[in-house]
Image (tube, rainbow, N blue to C red; front, side, top):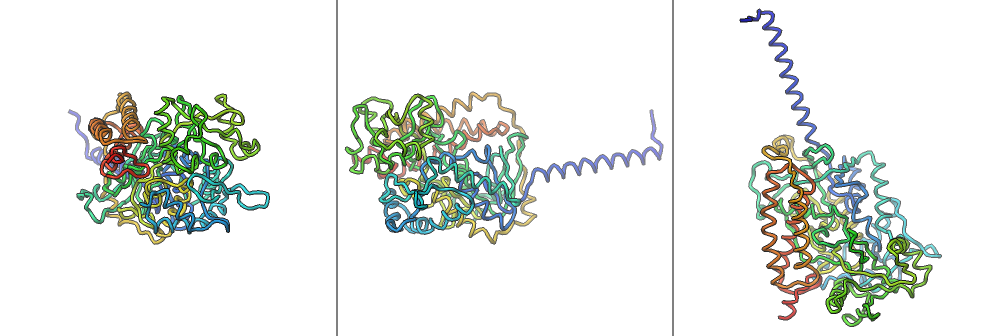
Length: 554
């Protein structure tokens, strides 16, 4: 037997101590790497998230979590413009009334007044950041009119207003030394006292948000991000449906996270379908044909060439979106056609080329010259009017958590969104959230240290991707066929029953699988589908975007 000398024993103990110390330091370092701390956490990189980030960066360090790239957002897809009273012929009162009428009167009037009255100042903020809006020959803003508006009050930049706003904001945040941008990162769950072992229910009055668990897509690691204030700006949930104008990664993530954290979510039954997207079945997302084209004089026609919208509403093609969408849906069902047409042939050719160059180029790609040809169009899921319930400062029911943009339900839209009010809503409430964030305080270090890291113990890499993709298609078919433009009680019940099975299967898969974005997105969309269906079943009136033909009969 080999026996160590006393000297060798001391050397061995020293080596062992050094090795153990190294392991401890390594563990501590790894632990610290898996925990990040900022002053403000922004989840989402569209107009709402970036506008807030630029403002709060004056008061601390900001982290922006981008699911894909920073400019891959729904904001970029917004063609029409941003609504604001900017001329003497218009008035705040007119804009307020137009918004209330479009929302079927169930809007929060106080919120409508706040948004409309603060609009001009927020427009000036955007211009100061570097956003360009079209002007006329006199140097004044070239204002458009869209469906539901009584006056021309839509500021625009050709037919790519959202892309121009996004460009200016991205440039601003990239040059800001106080802002860190995390592209290809995905927020999985909000961190609350639930993660400290405290029971949290929807009746808990003081739920607190400490940040979020964030997944680094490239490194395949989940880390904790702690913040004084967290802002949800993740957009809508159009991909719950088969056809949508939303980018493919817009999957209701923020709304689903807040719901799972026991926050209040409301008005999810009000899903707005845009009346006019380019009929091109092989393309996803659906290409939007802006409402501004109808504002410029384009008319919806059926295959017989009839201006059919006037049969449903005296405002014709310029009626609010819910009315026009149902008119198109009705015409398609009566004729059996898969689309109707938008006729822009009578509009001045220079106006078409100057104001709608993107649409002209896109249609030309598939052999349609909008100067001479009718444009085939069909409705597609577009905008969520409900979402995370917020107050006049974008505060949610969870402390230290804000929601802004399409993910939020501020009360502005009511049962239907008035065209081009959405970009406006985003900047107004991003600014108000900023005003409320100035005196933010971080949770104590002891509390943050007790919050565990993401635990993947016992999970495996899921190779059965077919389970995720097939379930997603099934969900989208359920929502499109049973919870679409026109609903019935029977369809809603059938959708709920089908979704219950998908929910159980997906939760079982999530608990046993390592994190993947596709599985998380499916899980979030199932939560979204559940909320839309349950809140649609609970609303016993057919109003606005929730058109239940059974309730009309009664």
